[in-house]
Length: 403
Image (spheres, rainbow, N blue to C red):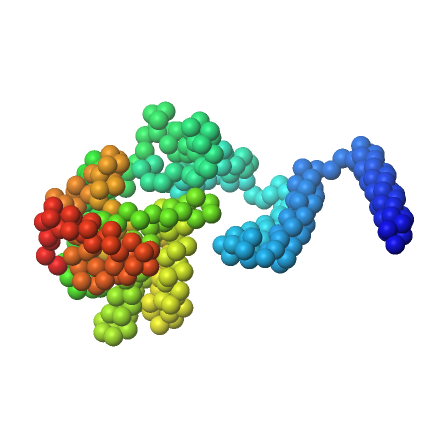
């Protein structure tokens, strides 16, 4: 029996070896033929890009689909599968775009006299030079804000080399004059106050429309839920996902409780025809955790209640009525840990100090419903006993704020 197995295995090995040799020979022959053809009739850059993309695209799709189809869930988390499907959708979009693109069409296009680049401060300098290559351009107008978020650069080496610096910022540093649009029409004056002082030297004016009483809206009862507030969540219980991105499930619980209260107020009172809520976090793991917890409140867009949960970069430039951690139209409620932010000695320290001086600082555990959400989250984390002791210390040193 063993002798038969040895013979079968030996035969299979010889066949596989022969198969690989034949494949290698045919591949060499094919490559040699393509090389000979390319010498006689060289391909254009456009053809090369399309051909190379097609080659890599097919392999990426093959490997991705096989990985998330056949690997058990204990080896590949659902978040990874979700990201892979998103990547495949992007590949399909890019494939469609490449197939529609034709250099010849651009060559026949009418030359441009004027080029306008919007959000120019969010583009890398190299990206801004792409449209500048268009024929016939005599004037270029860059529209942007170098005080807002720059382009995203993941490589630390590239970031240190200022690869993400925009052409807009570069021209300003070289002494080119920039025209400041000094009237803001988007947010309540209570929200614009701090960024105006911190980033624009107080040069930004609030438009008449945002100072009118009709612009001020109340979505929830209590002083904490005014136009602007900092909500201190004293808990520091952080966890990390498989990509080492942090998340604080107590802060997640507070955010979700606020959204739940907004939804209840919207459905019961019918006071507002439409509420758009933006919940924003700088960490991907926290974004995913909030999205998971708030699944119940998605899908009500048609009835007027909309919730958008994204990272800071994902939300930049978007609009919402109520917003955590970023700019919006009517209300900005920032949830964070006061002690951690003050120790950071960054702009967040200044923000917390400003919130206190303007009477917009509140402790989450002094609010009944938020305190319940905090305690529930801590029980789930099996750290309730530690929290009771920490709460006693906090209440001793903090002056309670009226709600």
